[in-house]
Length: 94
Image 1 (cartoon, one colour):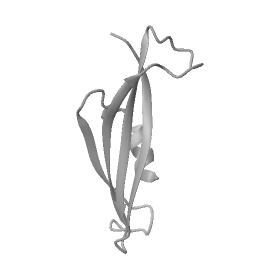
Image 2: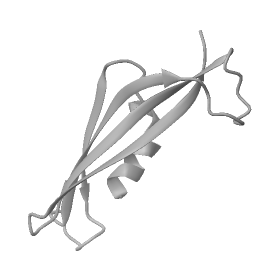
Image 3: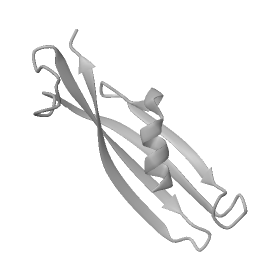
Image 4: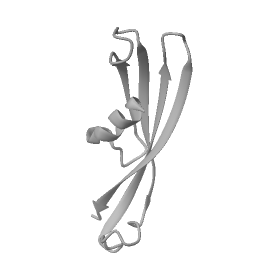
């Protein structure tokens, strides 16, 4: 969850084309040491759609860019987990 949350807060990594964004983190909050857990995030652009209904954004003036964040983490016991989360941003059309 920490990885997904951090990836969603990093607006500079939001991609609007076929490029990908990657980052690696170390979580020192759990276990107290730098080797407590490591995780990496990858964000990928998926598609553009109309803004969601009742969002207040005109489909004529705005697009919605969709990204997917995939996080892979590993703890000190070598347990591995993969989480995916969709995220979108409403953008003015050019």
